[in-house]
Amino acid sequence: MKLVLENLRIADYIIATKLNAWAISSDWTRFIVIFCARYLILAPILVYLYLFLRKRINAIIVGFVGVALAFFIDYLFMLGKFRLRPFASHSSIIPLDKDVTVASSFPSTHMAVAFAIATAIYLYGHRRLGPALFLLAFVIGFGRVAAGVHYPIDILAGAIVGGLSGIVAKFFIEYALAVHRRNHQEE
Image 1 (cartoon, rainbow, N blue to C red):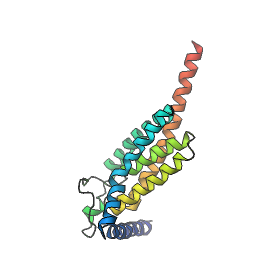
Image 2: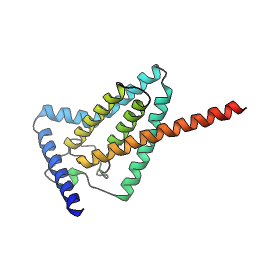
Image 3: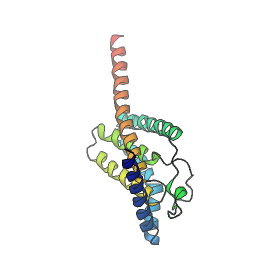
Image 4: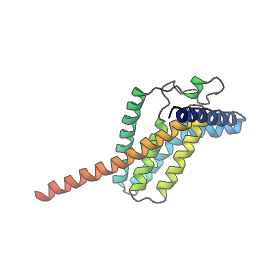
């Protein structure tokens, strides 16, 4: 098991280093990576606006609950397992996002949030919008690794946290709605 973890750590470092080297190779790649790593996470706000206009309130509520749960789980992980960001651990990795803190990189909060939203929207029947948001989440994750602020394992862990948070949020909201309906039918 120790050997497997060590090999994962090495693979994490190699992938992060290679992507970061590619990202800093030109102004164009820097721009793309910074956009993906820093600003693409704002796209779900437009999705929420679209869902609001389409009166898909349950998907919005589940998304918000999923995001809140993802933040909470992410916080618990950070309390228990602090992992320096790649740029703080390795001088060969140059951070492209100069505003990022040296907070723990594991798991990726950006990925947890993006996956919680994508999962909630997918589970509420948006069969085209959901997969598009999952793809967007992976692009965000790619940008975060290339920008030198996360390792690939951080991205994977964030995706798992976010996906599970979205699933739990959907079941929680459906249960709460069922209890609410049952209580109001009895009156």
